[in-house]
Length: 242
Image (cartoon, rainbow, N blue to C red; front, side, top):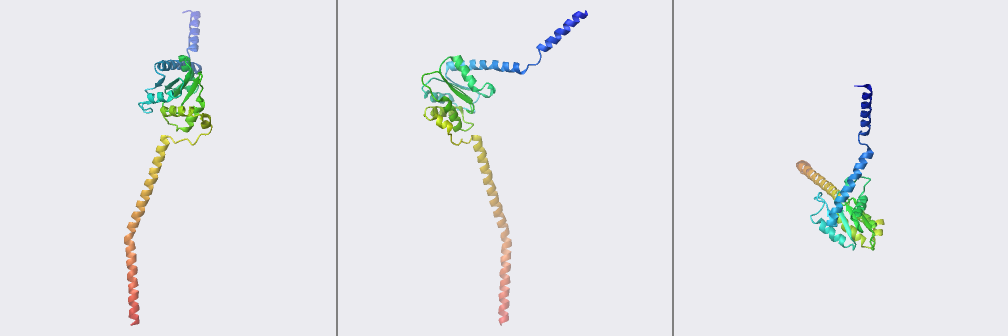
């Protein structure tokens, strides 16, 4: 093989390695962004059939009648509402639920309130696009988050959101929230601690009672000995007087 041909082949190999190297962060980000529209398309297609979409991949987080209860809640808003209850953790830090609400509105092309929320209810967002009747959507959503525990279900989250949005006090409740209720996990841990303390008290009482019962024979011997000693003294005193 001629040297010139070998040089050409070597250069081709180097160029191939350079352009077909490992996928860098920019390429990975592009792939991740490409996956987002496909998810939005899937959810938008589901929302065209039914304005309330509830994932079937979280049966433990949602009751069987979740869709019906959410549908009844958002119907009270008096404006069109589109709800997607879907896992949000996989969206990535640069693609929050708010980005998905924008994409869904773009796909559907309809005005209304768009809600994207995780089945657990702890992560999500609500936005209103267009419409003649404006509601305090952002204030109501944040107020609901402040008033409910971290592990609340999406059903309860949306129900509280609707209540606050229609209360006329959404901004006030957002700015002045009360103490946040404990989560189910926190309540379970507190119950375990309380049970442990109760068990400790029972054990200490049993130990104290056992120690007291164990000391009764010794106490009886000491009392009997003192009584006998007192009787001997009394008997000796009588003989001395005689």
